[in-house]
Length: 374
Ligand SMILES: Nc1ncnc2c1ncn2[C@@H]1O[C@H](COP(=O)(O)OP(=O)(O)OP(=O)(O)O)[C@@H](O)[C@H]1O
Image (cartoon, rainbow, N blue to C red; front, side):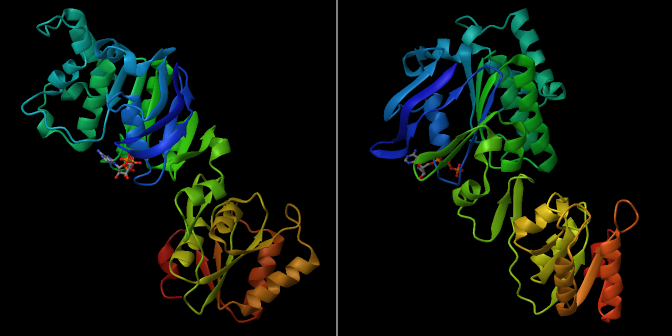
């Protein structure tokens, strides 16, 4: 329904992004991701017809979007940009009512149906309680909801949102992102949205476009697009690694302390220990872990040394020797609270050996303070 064909966007003679070929259908979310200044907003503003393309065409249902009359376009597409608005002395209801403009008469009079749609739109974003509240008395999250309700009141088929979560706290970020998914599923909308939080973007997007260096460097299903090399390159990451499995970043291990810590963990019980140790510059080795173990995935993203199982719950003599060697070289051994309540044979043997070697042994039971000043 919405398609860009060889689109170039920019200002004056400055082409910000070129050769953009994207397509989105009803019931889909397209997330645009990229570093600051990559051109995400410029692309959205061009799709929203606030800017003319430098080159190429944007189609909406086969029609050239820049040729449509604003009032006709407003019935098809609604736009929520980042700029903080200052609408003066208006209530939530008044702001949402602006969304009805494409449908009202010359005097902007609201019919009963308009009022119903305004209230429905507020309900859709859980903002009914804000209808009589003054816009300038609302929190950032509440304002954002009202702006989205205004867009919904336009009864669009396409919704364009520029960084809708930028002023929101963690809870409201998640809430709003889930709301977008709900709108797509319930109203069959097509949504084009820029998000800075790639973890959330991954969760809700049907398609993702990554923008960098004036180009769309990757486009498609998020699960295909979000590869480590691509994401690391997108953000020029040096000190962190994107993990495709976690869908997030882990700090890269950069030991600055002359202390080596051997971590015995598994099934994700070591995640916080590993993060704490890497953050605080310890030299870390972890094992013995199976490749599919959650702690393995996290340690791998950190670039921490891992002693691997050869098969599930099996370790060769050679690898076990290696584990014991590493144990000898380590200053401290930390072991975690296993979810099953009991440790497997090889890990028990490691702890026993650590005792024999006279190592300092710390049991982590969920309280990270046990690692203070090790
Ligand atoms: N009105 C303007 N006139 C000229 N150049 C502009 C204008 N607005 C933005 N730019 C430039 O265009 C480039 C892309 O900006 P844009 O706002 O689209 O990036 P973005 O990807 O949305 O960034 P951010 O994540 O920081 O919001 C930047 O180099 C910016 O300085």
